[in-house]
Length: 323
Length: 262
Image (cartoon, rainbow over all chains, first blue to last red; front, side):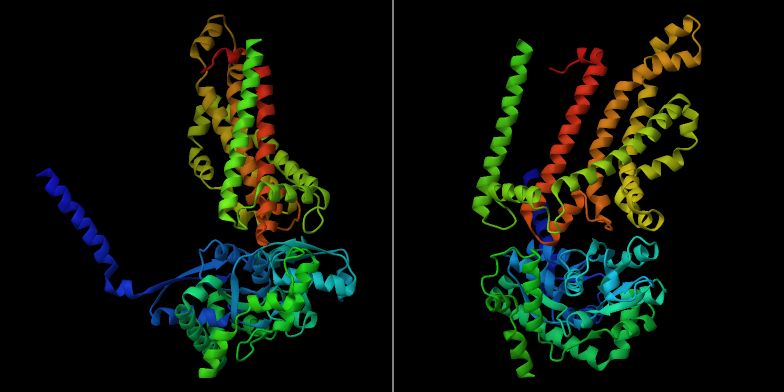
């Protein structure tokens, strides 16, 4: 009798377990999407997809994850915890340089970072001997500060910190300036903590900044899922370009900053349309990473092959041509 | 003679356990063939690189170790200076603890990492690291001291009381000698937690040196060899400090070694 009861209890548990999944859930494809803290200005399409639940409308069940910087997003992609992401091209290349199969699918934005410094600093030459905050040595901003130091033949000490903490560190005098992505720089200027001395446009005009990323394995094994995500991404990207005011309101809500600060910050960001990646700037940045040892020497045998393996525009081209 | 033989045996088995762990790691690394599981040779190469060339920014390994050690000692010393007298006072005057535990106990459960945003705003540079390490080390020292006072053998206290000893004499001659071994244990636990806090403290940023910062730097570059070197250094230094502590403890409290679980 007891045994019979046990069998029934087990059957009930199984029915409940599998029953709760339901046919609707079974049809949903689960994806995990990562983005950066207050990066809505650099990845507006991702913000729009999230806000308007566009991926869910396409039948995806999405788990969103927020990361402090591109390098942390890359760590989670490398460990297989994230399928898609939006972050800087530099962390992608560093990760790829370590043999992790991450690939760039499309551009999210170009330029959009700047260096904010104390009022006493007037020109890049004045940065000599100064402490400049960056989001970490694996970030595009860190690479840019390194380039500024090299181009101006000055010695800059880079200090890693969270982008949202940078204005506080600057205000307290613990750093002389910082380089971050918009709108954190605009916020510091708005708070009168400092002024903008250089934009990333001044450092490397038209440089690629944030990109849409996935794992090479996913692209090869499940191109349909990647195609569907890309289609949704392009729809969101087009919506952003057509509805700037609505998007700015959405950015203000998401970042907790005023629309005035967002508008000021947006002046430094560009959005290539169609969102192809600027491969020339990728090459320059990759070479910089090799020169500074962030990508170990000997990892990149041929720069063109490395870029071709990192950036896979075929799907983007196919979807744009179809459109 | 017997004791020395036993000591040699212990050393042999400890070395053997390290060798077994290294073999397992090598096998796993060879099987995985992944950049996330570097071979022992790659870890060694990273270690040598960090010593001879320095990290990606040219900062030497010893500079990182020194920076972390100073921060740990500052935080740990502050925890001892505050935790021991406070624990003693509250143990000797339990009413003091009972009437303030509503503020002390909840703070005990707030992890140091949760204090980071406040530390960024309220403190500057070195004091920030010391504060977070202090938070981690303070409570084990304070609580152990507090509890050890309540566990002092009442028989000892009563004996001296019979002979007319005053309260100050009892504290100096009975309570403090009785609680010292427990305080030492609390300090040892506190030191361990201080090392655990260093990575969290150095995560704040604003400095480029420190073992925690070294690990985070290479985590950004996904270079596991250097990350493992940093982890091992924390483990080895923590182990050495713990061993030194045990030796000092054994010397000072020799009478205590009469009790053994062997």
